[in-house]
Every structure is written in C-alpha cells, then in structure tokens.
Amino acid sequence: MNKKNRLRLIHLANFNSTNIGNGALIDGLENTVESDFPVPVEWLRESWDNYTFGFIDFDQTFVDKVNVSDGLIIGGAVTFNGRDYNQRTGTRFELPFELWSQITKPMVFYGLSYRHWEGQTYHHLDKLKMTIEKILEAPNMMLTLRNDGTRKWLLKMTGIESDEIFDVPDPALFVRPDLDVEYPEFVEGVKNVIIAFNDEDSIHRFNEHRSKSNKLILSRDHVVKSLVTAMERLTEDYSINFILVPHYFDDYKMMTTFLEQIRPQLAHQQMVSTGLCRVKDTGYFYGRYARADLAISMRVHSMSPCIGLGTPMVAYTTQNRMTEFMDGIELEDIYVNAFLPNSDDKLFQCARYMLNNGDDLRIRLAGTRSKLRANSKKIHDKIYGFLSS
Image 1: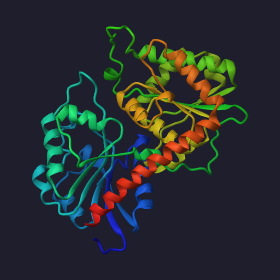
Image 2 (image 1 turned 180 degrees about the horizontal axis):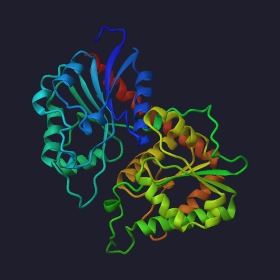
Image 3 (image 1 turned 120 degrees about the vertical axis):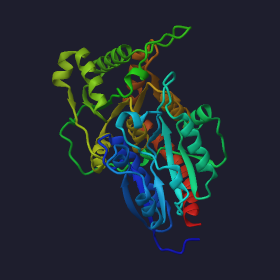
Image 4 (image 1 turned 90 degrees about the vertical axis):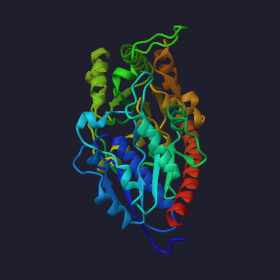
C-alpha cells in the first residue's frame, strides 16, 4: 500500500467552463473523495477544455505530469458524444494511444457519461471501442460510469460488458451550495420556483416524430407550450416568483421562446432571470437551488443537485439518461416526459403536489441522497485501494 500521508492527484476536468454543470461535477467529486479517502488529497487541477479546444496538446508533457503525481482522476463529464472534434476544430484532443503505455501511475475514469441521440452519427465509433478495450486491458486504469444508463448505452454501441466497469452516482448530487449569500431575485412570502431550460442538441433532442401509437410528440414547440400552460396554471393557485436559471448559452434560446408565449403580466411582474457562472462560482450558483421552493428541471445538472440538496423538483425530461437515472433511484414519480400529449397537465399536477408537500419531499430526497452517498463511498474505497496499490 502507498505509505504517503497524502495523495497528489491530477484532476482532469472542465475547469474553465461556463457550463455550470461541470462545476457541480467537479465540486461533488472533490468534496466526496476528500471526505472518503483516509489521507488528505492535494488536487493538481488540469483544464480538460484547454486540450479540447487546442490550446494545449495531450503529449509527452502531459504524460510526465501524470508520472510525477500519485495518479490521474479523469472527471465525469459527457465524454461519449460522438462529435467529430478533429473536423470541427482542426485539433487533436485525445491522448495518442502510443503514449498510454508510458503512463506508469494509476488512471481513474470517474463517472463518464454520454449524450448521443437515436439516428445521430457517432463519429469514430471504432476509436470508442478501442479506447474502452485498452482501458479494461491496462492494469493501471479503472473505468467507472455515471449511473444514468451509460453502461447500457455503451454495451449497445460497442458490445462491451465487463465486471471491471463500475457504476458511480452522479457526483453533482453532492455539490456544496453557498448558504450565506443573499439573492435579490428571491421574493419573501411567495413560492420561489426555479425553471432550468435545456436547448442543447436541439436538432436531435426535438426531432419531429410521431410513434405508431401516436402517443409521443417529439416537438420543441409542444414542450415549450406545455411548460407555459403548466406554469400559468400554477399561478392560479399560488403566489409565485419565477426565477429563470440558464445553465449554458443554449438555454437562452428556449427561454426566449418561453417568454414569447407566457402571459406578459407574468413576465413583467413575476419573473426574473439569472446569468451564467463560471466553475469557480459553483457554490454561489447552486445556493439558489438550496433556497428554492421548487425547481422545474430540464437539465441533468439542475435535476441531480436538487436531489442532493433536498430541493423539491420535477424533472421535465427530454432525454433517456434523465429517466434512466430517475428510474434507477426509485424517483420515477417525480419526472414528467415532456413529449407526452398531456405533458402540460402532468407537469402541473406534479408541480402542485411538490408545492403542497415540500417537507415530505425533502425527507424523501434526503433518504435517496443518503443511499447514493453510501454507494459513492463504496466506489471511493475501491478507488483508494487502486490508487494506493
């Protein structure tokens, strides 16, 4: 076992991102690992996005950095998306396979996830399969996937299944909010309801299609119209202050569509919008969620932090990995499929229940968080043993 009284670990993650979900992943991972490891951790933070956009190359310099540390943690972002980065940016962003064998220290791929749509081309699928095979063959590499259906998706795409692939709870569940900040967008004496939109990959997410049973309507217009209807109905029963919370630039497009359809009086008197935050301001950003009476969450990293913070939430879902995650943790009754023909009524009824039963929901979510935290502790014990062997 490692005799050191601390571990110096490189954490490769999107530290320069303005998509705050990356901040939740980073903070939750570092928070829980620090708590679970029996020795202190010194983080050597490396910005993955600098490599993605070609400011730095994955080369011998990177290999040397890893080899003078105690190990490498590759943070659990959406890693499997099939984009043709080489064509889009003209840069290499991957560590060439010929350098893999030169890394002598342990490498942990932590909670990797996917965002890939039915019918979408997955570029470099051969490289994906080769990469997973090399990770599983290497004695100094460990692969863990986020518990959102990524294992099932990876099996479908590559045919690879292994007992050496481990599932880990989304680390964003354990983000640390700043609880000592006053937020001027909140209003005393009314219900403060956060709405987190999601317009990423819009062309694939909202591809127009009707199923044979005519039950699903995959349409962006339908999703937004249903959201508008449900929120307007809520204001008939409650005094509400709506806080529109974009997580990334894509969300502004859907916010604009929403505001074009909502009653002008609501937008003028009962709504306010926040702005984006950088990773360094993660605690500040999620402090809002900790104070909210309800969140309508279309984003994964609006949904999972709510669960961890105990914030009553309705996941308004437009992708399978959200529903896979919720089904897997037995919260299938607090999400609404946004593509259902009656999604407006279902969303209204679910949101209304949350507002009427907030205390019960907080207790239930605390129990869910406790179970997931115990699961992450088990994985961290395994990771510590791996890093220390």
